[in-house]
Image 1 (cartoon, rainbow, N blue to C red):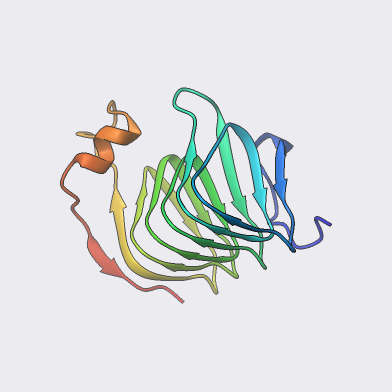
Image 2: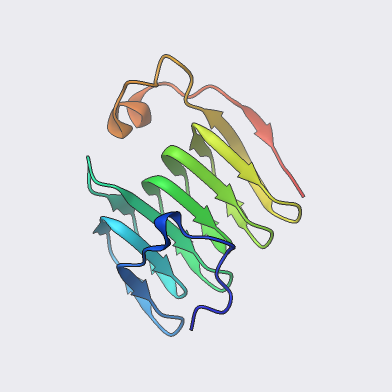
Length: 144
């Protein structure tokens, strides 16, 4: 069941699993560890003030925005990513959209069609909602 997961999951904790045969349509709010092997069509938001890690497995697909402190991507994501702490793009990651991050890790083979936008010192103390509302600065990045 977890054979294709990335090298690590923050804290090793998976509270919620969306299996490979599942298609979820609608917005999803979570805390703790969310591991996606299936398909989610809609916005995914971590509960404010809670520890949360979203992991998108190699065969997983997300179509919509993602808002979480830690985001690990090894599947296909179409939409913007807002990570208050860290984003990891594993070797099979395919992202079409902008990635807002504090710390980013990109493995060889990952692709990003969009912009990497660093949450600079101006945004360091702000909430994720404030970061989304602030004007974005960045440059076009496509990595392979």
